[in-house]
Image (cartoon, rainbow, N blue to C red; front, side, top):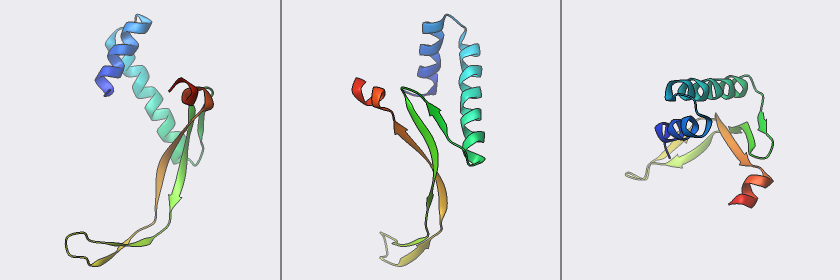
Length: 89
């Protein structure tokens, strides 16, 4: 499922237009992004939790040449599904 499919599903289930569903989804994504960027976490009870995790710097290898390269430290978004979501799968 991609974003367009999700917007169509939200529109169909709620009876709102696709434009309104797109605006709602964009607002949700923006809110989650801002919260994670600020160092917070987003918990949706029954669904899961979005958090930020830090990856430390490490050495890797270029698969083509075998040369050792340095990979910089960075922050990544993580999602952990809740118990109710896991039970439904």
